[in-house]
Image (tube, rainbow, N blue to C red; front, side):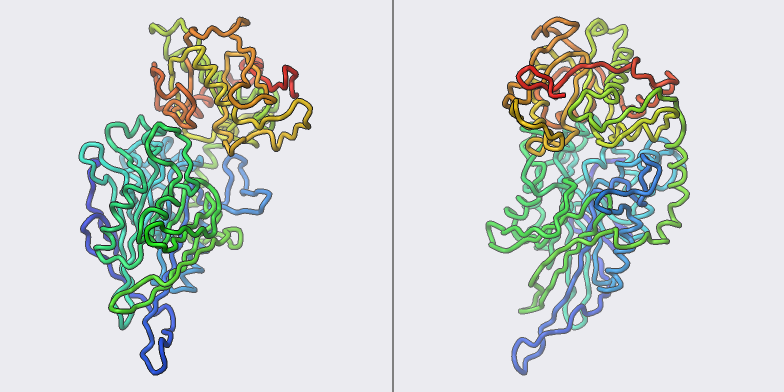
Length: 601
């Protein structure tokens, strides 16, 4: 399907540059207030904008990895079926014609449900199914959805097919065709809300996505799409929307509010720039924030040019929360103006599933439950990630062993076949467990929760030492005589678990008593001190290979081989071929934490 901007006309919404505005009837939202004794009351209107983000394929309150209802220590509930009930309640209270429902991206990746309909029974197949997320969001009545970075994980063909199946536009003002530099997706959505006795209120939603897509899904988008910064594109489009008569400008941004980036200096853009957009670009009234998976009921940012307040809100991911923006407008001097904006979040655990959504998607859900419960082998003992953040755990060695084997097979007969192959892997989950006895796809999927694929890079010993030093920044510096609290030992500077790497095939110590940058000690390969000039084939996931996490050297290293099969699938294939999952076939002690040479554990 062509990547150039396409005309988009569905139901009552018209999007894209130069498009006409759609009209919906709207009842008066608030009683007029007397502005002065004996004067006519000013016209007022109350608009409610509801928002979700980072749904990641969660339709039901179900944990496919545990084959049970989702629960957590905080009592959260998940899924669009719950959100649908909240949306219905808000529409009942406010009047459906006075509400808008939007999303800030990361929709079609993240659960076995989304994987199943991308890979096992793909929506792209001739006569293939309609994506469950499209079905659910169509039924709930979303008005517009911004593109998230994970929308690109399965390639552009899958994304375009999903877009085709949606009754709402997928917005991406900064997702540009690489050749024409024109929007490859609708940049915005506009809608009119009619108010008796006054001109309609015109509301624009500008969609912005994450520039990191250029790194994280380079294999799919390089040469096809380019992703400039959010601030740059907001500054371009907001004035256009105002010129087109927008009374209210909402930004749906798949970008956090912290002003940080996980891809270092590889791009001249900031990953989490929603607050910067609010600060730098005038005439934005509210921003629905996504990507960061944090809960922000209300964040007020002052625009540097106008002094006006912009309200930001981010609902918790996986449909655990619904953001609500209440926007009050007043009609004066011939035009509508925003008088106030406030926001809050509603908790999905306060309601039951919407039976309409349950009925609609039970069949799809049950297919996936059956799929993930297929038995592929047996394990001789329990394998768990509970201590994998700070101890070399055999369950992570399983990942690196599979990656090593796949890459060795792929490079057999090539000029690189004689080089040693080593691998990286991260402790993605703190709760994954492969039980003793029967092993299912579900068990293995819980170990590798991302849809990453495998890449082989050429690295030197010196580069690998730098790589290990960077990874070791994950640990909090701990004095030799201090008590070790494992709950406070990791995630230094808020580094997530998925940005801490094991490296198999080498033996090394991490001295956490030392400052970051000087922690890696006694690095050996095959029992001898690591030679800085020694060349290795490094088996890494595509996120890391493309620079995710900003690890040194790996993104610029020569690529020797890559594939599109998920590492999770490769693990299932390896276990199926073995039949028996026995740690003696993959476990190794490669690293340990020390303090001044003394092991921590």
